[in-house]
Length: 201
Image 1 (spheres, one colour):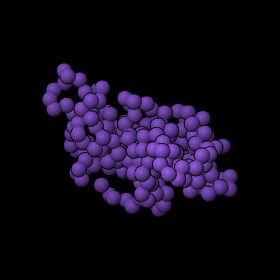
Image 2 (cartoon, rainbow, N blue to C red):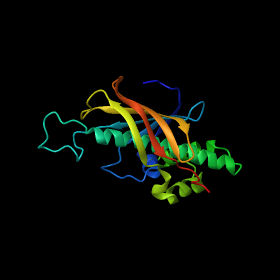
Image 3 (cartoon, one colour):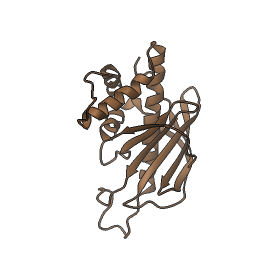
């Protein structure tokens, strides 16, 4: 993994559910672990794979392996979260607001979900409502993928995603991704998603 430096950002399942339209068992990101807007938008996220996942059947060979199609979906979902961060922060700047408001709102939501001190009712409510109202349009669809899987993934593994926005066209955004398990790279490569913009406008 490139270990691109990101600002620490510990956001759990409540925030992931707010950002992504997918729902279990096809929600393949558990938490957000880091984000940086500059010099290149980068997001760190993770997913713990359990043997109790519904896609592991008793009829499958032992040991069961995580289907690569689902690992790819997890990578794309992490990139979708990064798309939302980028789009919303651009929108905030365009209307004269501080882009940091997004991160503050998400941190506050996580505090409230965990019933931890410091939660401020109403903080960033308009931003979060706009994200929710955007519906499935708030995430881009996979257009092309050049990802290579180097190792198999098994129950008990924690997949650590790093996704980086490397280039943008008029309608498409291009990403690089690295996925690690216990410090070993299990997947890496590039892929393209349809562009997401105008969530707040």
